[in-house]
Length: 434
Image 1 (cartoon, rainbow, N blue to C red):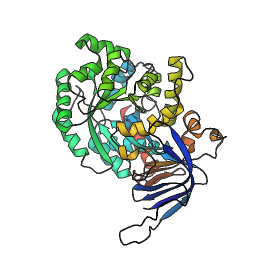
Image 2 (image 1 turned 135 degrees about the horizontal axis):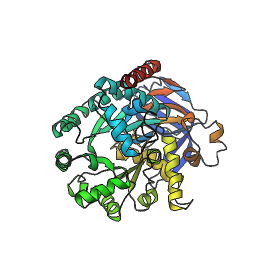
Image 3 (image 1 turned 30 degrees about the vertical axis):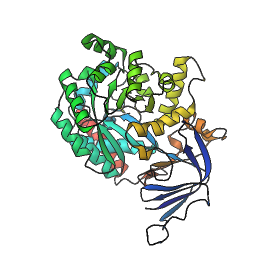
C-alpha cells in the first residue's frame, strides 16, 4: 500500500544523537520511505520504470501532528503477559524460582502463540514497531508476530532447565527463514542459570554463524558476586573469555558493572540495554546510564517482560531511564532528553540489527508512528523532544505502521484478530494454572 502523510511535523535524527523537527510530508511506497521532507520539495518519483505516477491508496492529513520513528523495545519476554500482576511484590529470586519458572513449565506452544499476540497489541498501542524477544518456542513466537505483520527479533533463552545446543541452532535457522519481519540472534538466559559447558556451546554457535550474543548481564549485585565466586570473573569478563563477542552483541540490564566491564563493552562495541521499570520493581538497582553515554557505549532501552514490569510501555521507560540516572548521579543536568529518545529509537534498532528501521529517511523501512500533539500533555510546544521523553505517553499514539502497513490507528487494530478473542485466550491460559 502506498501512503502519503501530509501537513506533518517530521522528527529528523542526526548522527550526533540530536533531533530537529521540520514541517513537511512523508511518502511511503510499499514498505519503504521514499520521501521525508518539506512540502513541495519531494522528487517526482514514479511507481515503476514505465513512468506511471505513484497511486496513493491513502493520503493522511496529520493536522500538524508528529511523525517519528517507531520505538524499539530492545529487551522483553512477550508471552509473559499471562503472568502480568500474578507474582508481584516479591524479591527477584522468589519471583523467578517460586512463581515464574513453575508456571512457565506448564506453557504449551499454542499458549505462547496467543500470549504473544496479546503483547503485540500492547506494543502497537505504545508506538513500538519492533521488539527484541527472549522466550520459549521461538518458531511459534515468530509465527504469531508474522501473522500480525509485526517485526520481531528473537534471541535464545537457553539455560540448564531444558533444550539443547542442537535445538538452539535449529531454532536460529528456522526463525531466520520465516520471513523478512522475523530474525534470530544468538544468546542465552544468564550466567547463573547456564552451565559452563552450555555457555561454551553458545559461544561456538556465535562463531559459526558470525552472530552477536545477548544475555541477562549483571542485573543484580548477587548475580555478579555469585559469578565471581564461581569463576573469579564478572559475567561480562567471563562471557568475553569464552569468545562470545567476536561479532558483537550486548547485555540486558547491565546494572552492576565493574571498570573492566565498561572496557570490554567498549572494546567489542557492545550494547547496554537498560530496563528501568523492571529494575525498580524487583529492586535490582539503577543502571549507570550516564557512564555508558559518556564512554561512547551504545545504549538501548527495553521494558523487560510484562510479569516484572508490568507494562510494555516504552514511554515510561524513557522517562525513568532519564530521571533515575539524574538521581543516581545527583545531577539534574547529567542526561539530555535527546540521548534517551535516540536510545529508544536508533539505539534499539541497531542493537536488534535493524539498521533500516532507525530513522525517518528516504530508503528506510516504513516503521513509523504518528504522535498526537494536540493534547494537554504535549502543550505548549516549547520543546517537542523533551515533551516526548518527560510528558509523552501511550495516549499520544494515533497510529503505528510496521513495514508500510498500518497495524494500529485511533484505537483500532488491523492484525487479523479480534481483541476480545485474545483476551479470552489469555485468561483461559492463566486460569488453567491456578
